[in-house]
Image (tube, rainbow, N blue to C red; front, side, top):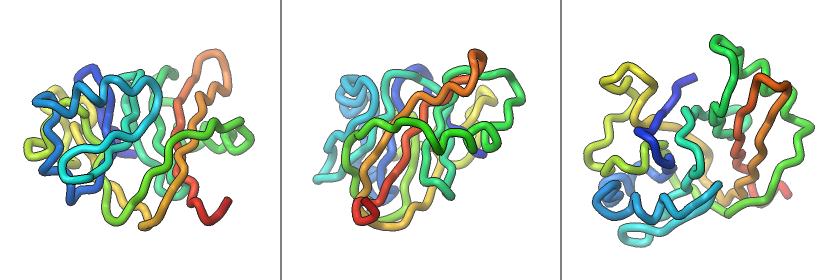
Length: 166
């Protein structure tokens, strides 16, 4: 799994075609910080960003389940994919609706889109500043859960559920 990390604030998911209008710390970041858990904000010329707020946790994307995985705490070396197999029975909370029409980017919300370094490790060696991901175009409901399979492990999960499949 490729992981993205922030310098301490929320992460933002947006279409790559809108990346150049994301202002990061120069404006959009302040609004992103108002999102406490998960939410959508508008920016630029009508673009939208899904904000994964509240925790500056390392975050990856599992394409098969269309799920963002935020590492809240776990032992080093935890097999994330294997651990998440048990999340199928979790009680997911309804969240915002998010429209996708093309490839997405997950990035540190403080970074202006024009400056984002995508799919390369950060200079400090931890994760990436931004990662690219593909999800089929469509309208999705975002559902979230804090998945804690034992006292030593907790992942915050945000999954994209196609609206037409409900």
